[in-house]
Image (tube, rainbow, N blue to C red):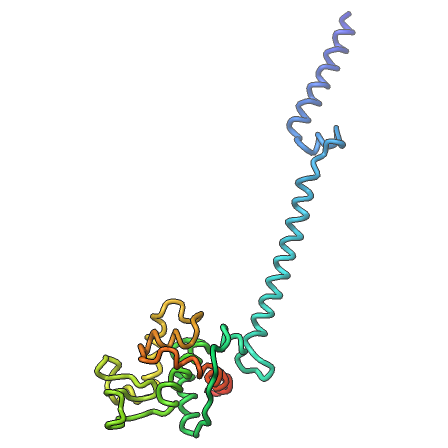
Length: 226
C-alpha cells in the first residue's frame, strides 16, 4: 500500500509539474501539446505587416524619386508642375522682351531666392509685373501715371510701399511684393490672378491670368542663371 501511495504521489507530482509548466511556458508549450490549436493569426499579421512596411517603403521611394524628377525638366530647369501647379487659366498673352526687361526678370528671380521663396512665387511675381509694367521699371510718367504708381509692380509711395527710390529698385520692389504675397493664406495653391490680386488690389483682378504661361517660361529660363 505504501509503495502504491508513493507511485500515486509521484504521478500526481509529475502531472502538477506538467500543468505548471504549461501555464508558465504559455503558447509555445500549448502549441507543442496541441498543435492543432496553434494560433497562426499573429504570424500572418506579422508577415502582412512586414509586407506592408516594405510596400510603404517602396511607395515612398517611388514618390521621392518622382518628386525629385518633378523638380527639373529634361534641360535641368524647374519642372512645369512646380511653375504652374494648377495649369494656366484662360487665353494667354505674350510679348517680346528687350534686354532691360529680361534683366528685370532675372532681378525678380534673384530677389525671390533671396526672400527664401520658390519658383512658384517667382512666377506670380513675374506675371504680376508683366501686367503692371510689362517688366519695365517705370518712373513717374506725368499725366500718364496711375496716381503715384512706380516701378516693376506699380507700387505707390502714398500707400506705404516705400519711397520712390525704394520702389524703383527691382530687388526692393520684388521683396515688398513677396512680403505681401506671403501674407495671403494658401497663396502657393491659388491661381496666379487670385494671388496677385490679393496683393495688388487692382481694378482689373482677372488681368493677371493671361501672363501665367509666359511668366512660367521666363522663370524656367532664368531660375538657374539668377
